[in-house]
Image 1 (cartoon, each protein chain N blue to C red):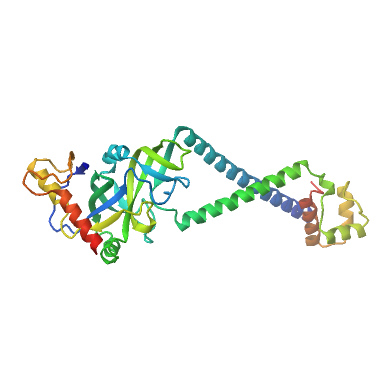
Image 2 (cartoon, rainbow over the protein chains, first blue to last red):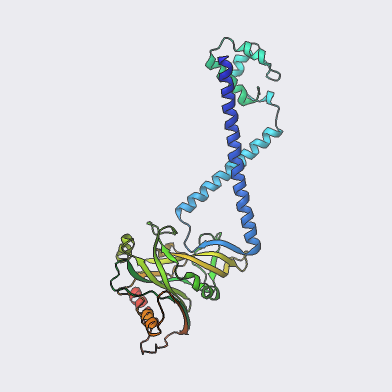
Length: 145
Length: 219
């Protein structure tokens, strides 16, 4: 019972973290899209909302640098999401070597079709914390849902 | 040389502790900026004389601001007000007051900096660019929303200037306002040829400007 509660907490936390990351990425994309639309509109009409006759300051350069970094992160996240969508099935995702070795010792050679009962039996000899850690790793790897 | 000018007439108050009169060259018209202004996507810009003259009314009553590093704008740090603006040849010149009592650090900087070190920068809204693909953007319409005092080297136009007047500013306009019975708060527009004498025989604001500029540059 206690173990199940811990597992579901871990699963819930990780699920929320993933959702948060995706929302952040989506927000950044929306902001970028809005800026692009504004620029396109400006290009079309020749209207510029604001110009200041001062040269770009260090702060603006820093902000530009951060924007570039954010765009790079977005591009990486997008590539990662696309790879996940089109990539190998969850069962074939990699898990840490130590976890794979441990599971192999417990008789679980393949992660393609892992049943909950089999996994629980294999983890029976571990402490609660170790079981949570192993299941979290499997969850991250997409082996268990 | 044609002079187009506008001014907001404020009542003169002798020894006002919070008014330090200033004069400055805000920008050059019909000439490309030395560097690309912020917001111009890397393009240098030309503010046309027509656009500048048409935008003069929007400049009056606008604030001058500053940043402690003297390298940009901070529209929420307003340390003065523009009460007079004119386009004289290629120069758009302004005059007004600094809030010297509220911003002693600004007045101190102006008094202590090297002559000619400080310049000005405008802030425009709703500017219209003739051709966005041009290497140098030509601004044919704009609204002034403010100005900043900054180091001249940080301004997009290098040939701007800012200096505090040694004595009570706006005296000429104030005298003219009294003579013409213009009430405080009214806006006057006048246009005359540069160098033309005032009716009272003085050489007018033009001479004062030139004298001040010559003195500043000679230093």
